[in-house]
Length: 156
Image (cartoon, rainbow, N blue to C red; front, top):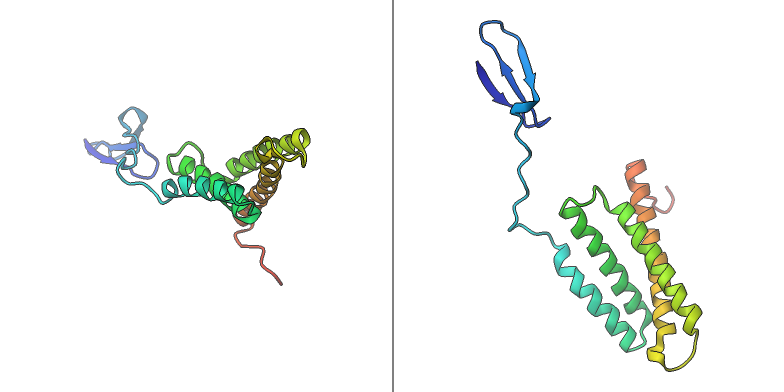
């Protein structure tokens, strides 16, 4: 009996040389090898960079840096989870992160508004809400690219 492992379907195919027919048995299947634990992607480096950029933007009242840092942080978390195979793609993760950002930011703006003091939580809420919108737009972009096979460019 010849034994030939199949890399495509994760099953093994055995052929009996006397009968000449293929027998597919799932109990001889070898699982896919785990990814190399020492090999990491670039997303791990962007997690702290996103947090630091967001806090620097909040500290110096520079909204674009705060929003960019929050979007980078959310995208890198989604990238890490996809890389670790906890999710198939970043689209649903980015949508969820965008919703969480928007709801928490809107809540902070509703509770603290533009009141001075209180660690300027109203400003942080605005940055969170805007970052949620940008993150959700990034998820929509990724979804569009995956569904159509192209990017929504200007003039296309």
